Length: 264
Image (cartoon, rainbow, N blue to C red):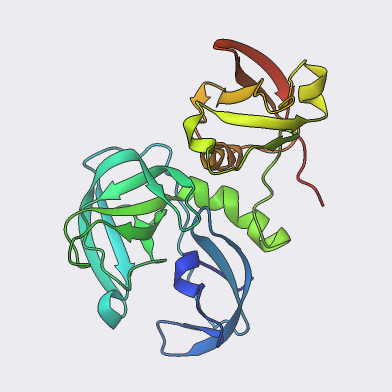
C-alpha cells in the first residue's frame, strides 16, 4: 500500500518534506502518517510506487539465537545500498528512546552499522526482516562493533496503530500519576488520583499530601518510573487483564484489573 517503515529520528527534522528513493533510481515524495518517539519508529506513505517493487519478507524475532548470522542494509555516510554482515551478539537488551522511555527486547549485533544505517532492515540469512537498525554505541560516532535493532515483532505490533491512528494506542490503567521532580525517590509510580477498575479494587490515591498506593510492577515486571510503566503498557491491548503489584506503607499486595482503552 506504499507504507515504508523507518526510525522516527530519521524523519523527525523533515519539516521541508520527505522523499523515498528506490533501487531503480526513482524517488517519490512521501508523507509521515504516524510515529512513536517511545519506540523510535515512523511510517511513511509513498505517493508513487515503482513497478516490480519487491517487498522484504517479514520474519520473526521470537526465535532468534545469539551467534546466528545477520545482514544490515542501509546508507552509511551516504553510501547507499550498502550491505554489512555480522552475528547476533545478545538479545533482550534495553535502550533509551528519544522520549526517555525504555525500548525492551532490543537485538544487539556486531554487523557494521554507522550513521545512515538508521531505519534500515536487519535481515536473517534467508533475507527475512528480523529488526530495524536504530542505534549504535561508539565514542567516535562510527562503527565500534555494538549496534542495536528494534525487533521485527515489536515493529509489527506498532506499525498497524501508526497507520490507522498516527500513534500507538497504549491502554491505560485509569489513574493520575505523580510526575513532580521528586518522583524518582519513590520505589514505583505514585498514584495521585484513581478511577475505574483500580478504584473498585480498593486502590487509593494521595491523601492530604500523604502517598498511599504506588505501582511497583505489572505482571511481575518492575515499574520503577512512569516511563518504564508506559513502555511496558505499549505491549498490551485494551481489554486484557493484568496483575498490578502495589505497595502501601512498605507492604506489597497484588490486584488483577482490566486495561482500559486510551481516551479518544
